[in-house]
Image 1 (cartoon, helix red, strand yellow):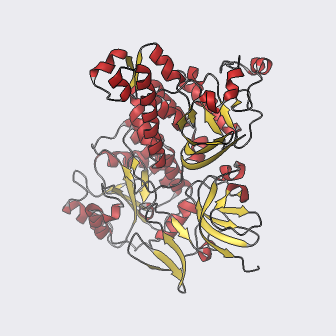
Image 2 (image 1 turned 135 degrees about the vertical axis):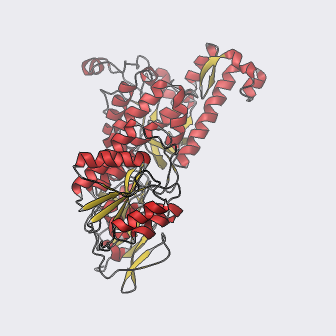
Length: 547
């Protein structure tokens, strides 16, 4: 008998509590498998090669233990919510990144999301980061012990000769006593503890990007996972209030970046404007609080729609400058834009300008940003106007030229709420009669003194009240069974959920007797398929008027 309760998620990685035969284990963790899974002692002839075809697997599938449940890319039956599953021979696929990801994604898509994943005889300090990032939760010391038997000294950076024990690179108890086996076990335990902390702080991706540089196969696994957008988009939160490290070329392929750009093109509704101005980004976030953007805003005086060109996000309309990750990313500034950056960002600009037609588009840019703007405009078949050729955008002459170029232009009715809601919910609320109060970015909106919306300053998302939800159509609903929640909504109480919902989304809880507002703690898919865990962090509950 097993059970799993996921407490924190960071992409495919999770942390929580796994109950195995009455024993509760906090994961991710390293187990003494002979104690936790005694049935494995009798599980002989269970290592069917992962590359074996369906017919071979069907013919030779072993009678494995009841716990953990053995699985294979071609044998995924008999798994229920709460089970612990084991992938025999998973260590053999670490050298084949393409198969690693293809088989992993096929298994993840087919099995319930609330299952614990055990990778036997696989974990060492140098690969535990990529195993956890891939969604494995439980590990053992077998690979570490085998390495010690071969005289291999294990570190997070790789595998080395045991002579390294005498080089002073580690001061653990095993190194002090000359016990290589103990050192290898302690190194794995320490690295897993570090990985667990990064999961808890929602920053495992940054750790993986730094660790994987020592192993080309790990880099390839990360890149192949990034290419599985449909899988990864479901498990990556829509917003977080932690920094977003944009320090490698792989950042362009992260779900957060792709999702933001797609929504800018597909969902976002700009204000009515004849003129758009393309502006450079700034180190300070949100941009409008920086000195450079204060100068731009004074020069523009509301006479154009402001669009910020930035790497790695692409294009950030002024109304979305608070939305994760636009106000959270940290990128090294060198002035150099590589070919991949230029291709991605110019593509976003081109798609946006094709969809949203402006009579004039002014490029108040220089350097790489100007280059990608030209590329995007050429793709879209649009002529740009330039207000700072050969000068810095913040130069007084450049600002005067921008002011002159906008002379006689009509003022644009900027609408922060409308812009964020269109990106966040895919719908445009009727903002007529809404009054705003508060100091930007902590803004609240009300109508007839009834609060409707507020801006979450941590994520930049809109938080609707019950009255605000009435303006947002029918999306982002979580329907629950007939009960009155006394706290957060658990997954077993969810009847159905809007497929668009991702962790971190604002949602409206709808039940036969109650309404609730809160934030999704898991995706719609997990809400529908999980038997345990918090589905919605509830902010407020009220009885329905007809009750």
